[in-house]
Amino acid sequence: MFEEEVIGFFKRHNLYEEKMFMYLKDHIDMIDYNDEDLRVLIGTAYAVNKKNRKIINMRICIPYCQDEITALICIHEIAHGIYGYKKLNKKYNPLEIELLPMILERIYIEEKQSNNLKKYADFLDSIIDEESDEKYRFGLENRGSLEERDLRNFKSIDRSTRKLARRWKRNNR
Figure 1 (tube, rainbow, N blue to C red):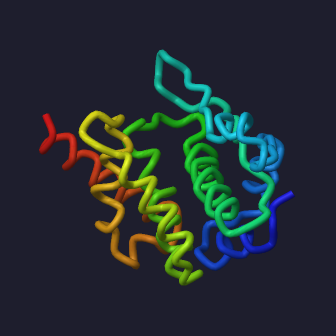
Figure 2 (figure 1 turned 30 degrees about the vertical axis):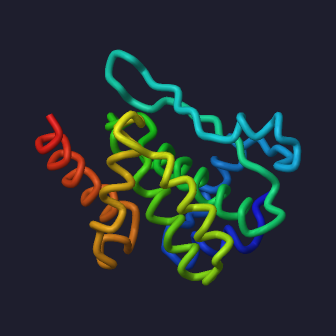
């Protein structure tokens, strides 16, 4: 199901838990990235209880991991899955959901030392502007704000992300 490189990435960064990845595996649909008509399906959708804003379920659509671009996409979407899993039956802030995936993308690119990946990610960044959804602007503006110590585990990432989100909201009213 998951390519060893992608799983290894999450293990190296203390974001792999067997039980969590078994849950994610059961909530993932795989597509052929070469079929351009299917690419629009790539993403993570959370089912949220509208009364209390708690995540109650999710569905993740990722491409089969066949090269470094599809590996990067898988890392991004699985990071959304990790966030969703850790927030199951808990209140969540939609503003926060892009920060972890954007941070992990850049860490992966740095580890791979790939110009091709960097160009791809820079292109994606370039289409985020003032008209983009707030969560993308927040992620782009804050992904460099977390210190290495904040990235030790999900709990420290989540705590730091919530602080950044509150500060960003105050400054962007």
